[in-house]
Amino acid sequence: AQSVAQPEDQVNVAEGNPLTVKCTYSVSGNPYLFWYVQYPNRGLQFLLKYITGDNLVKGSYGFEAEFNKSQTSFHLKKPSALVSDSALYFCAVRDAGGYNKLIFGAGTRLAVHP
Amino acid sequence: EADIYQTPRYLVIGTGKKITLECSQTMGHDKMYWYQQDPGMELHLIHYSYGVNSTEKGDLSSESTVSRIRTEHFPLTLESARPSHTSQYLCASIAGERTDTQYFGPGTRLTVL
Image (tube, each protein chain N blue to C red):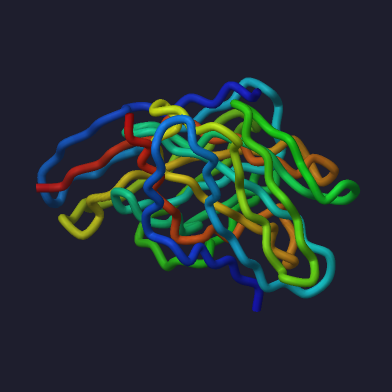
């Protein structure tokens, strides 16, 4: 069965410091991986995705993610965190069963402190 | 980005009422999805559709029903709302098989008293 794990419920980081939000996956076949962000009382916003190609994927708002096949990880990163980055972040993998269904992780709350 | 609209954004309703949550998109996307999300928690797929007159149940069992009579419209209905239905409901769509990214609407936060 396919699954996504986000091992940290919350990540705290000081503004200006680099941030990492962790994600590991378990899939059969090649993974299609996604990161979404959710601000309070809002829907999910697409940040970036990995389908194939370069292991380092660049996305919106200065975020990037590194695909590591040997470690089955897809960690989200940003070199310098902003207070406005504080939100709930979801990692997702496309379900191999078709219809472009996504399987989401439990989410990680990022808190960036001034 | 796709334009996906959900109405209402917030709904407080009494037990036993019938409600319909609206979702529409203007991009002609084939596939549409409904997710249920408790506040700050993970998303669970409850319904999806891959085109007009096609609907399927998702991974999480739900007492709601959906219909897809028009490509742009994917409403979700609860015949008799209960407090256990209190949650946020998110709608999403995707253009087609070769496009992988789901785009989400703003969500409807439902409270059943």
